[in-house]
Image (tube, rainbow, N blue to C red; front, side, top):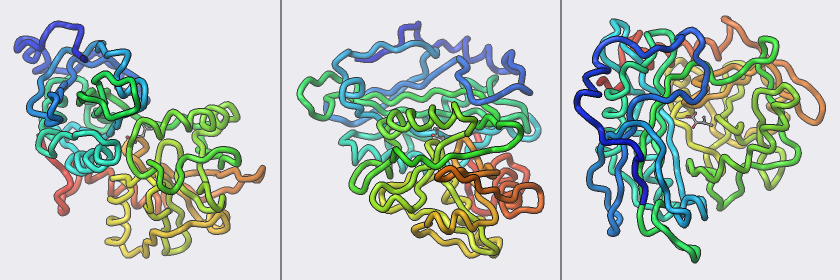
Amino acid sequence: LLHSSSSRFAREDLDRTKDGYADVNWDELGFNVVQTDYMYVMRSPQDGKFTSGELNPYGEITLSPSSGVLNYGQGLFEGLKAYRKGDGNGFMLFRPEENALRMQKGAERMCMPSPSVEQFVHAVKQTVVANKRWVPPPGKGSLYIRPLLMGSGPVLGLAPSPEYTFLVVAVPVGRYFKYCSGTLNLLISDEYHRATPGGTGGIKTISNYGPVLKAQVQAKSKGFADVLFLDSVNKKYLEEAASCNIFIVKGNIISTPATYGTILPGITRKSIIEIARDQGYQVEEKLVSMDEVIDADEIFCTGTAVVLTPVDTITYCGQRFQYNTGIQTVSHRLYNTLAAIQMGNVEDTRGWRLEI
Ligand code: COI
């Protein structure tokens, strides 16, 4: 069984967070672990249905050494962000129901029960409110929310875990990528692949992320911000980066790899497709060949953590290809529209913001 090792959540602790901000240098935020005040915990009983959860002080958890997540990787995670409203009071979540639905799809694939959309969104809201002093001031960043679903009950033979735990933690974040001399450089892996047809590349299981570390660490040691993967069958179609989805721009046409099961269906990806179509671009979800990547005007990546980040260079088979970045680009225009919606600077005509 899993439980918080700290004492239970107390009302007076929540009141302590009512006013003001945590002691953080908001100008120096990156994407690093910061210990906040509370986490949300919900456990499934044996019948597999989640009923209700609670806020606990943020702290270490105990987990059976025989748990399904530790032994057989039966786990999923999500990522979403809360922004502080412009007047400093109140918060906005970006499309949290989409994360809940993606977790449900992943849970089905991983033979796990999942929280309902209502339970998921309730847990996220509670976590934000309890940690509100950690939500950065407007324009300084966001509160990154990390829901986790794991097989926490004991198993020995390979089988679904008898019990599950849903956890939500939150961390103030700024920019995700570390730039090398002001440019964002990606490396295409010629050795490793991220996903295979029939595998789990299309869901957000924890077991998609450990295996890409080798390629990512190698790329970072050579000054690249992240690694890009090609498909594992033909070894010539673009799939995604270790941490985010990818788009290419050529004239008025924007292309991104189609989600046939090996690509993570990103919520930022889906939002950018809709925004770009509304702005008159032709958006194609298809197989994107390396020839098209080489020939592109612009490349950008999308994800909750990276939002929309333009790519300066891509290195493939020892050759470096350079792309347009800056304020005259399609990427810049799309980023501005998305960021304005997420941060509450324009009217939300699509119903993407959930206010707290
Ligand atoms: C996110 O963008 O939220 C992700 O889950 C990617 C992760 C590697 C930071």
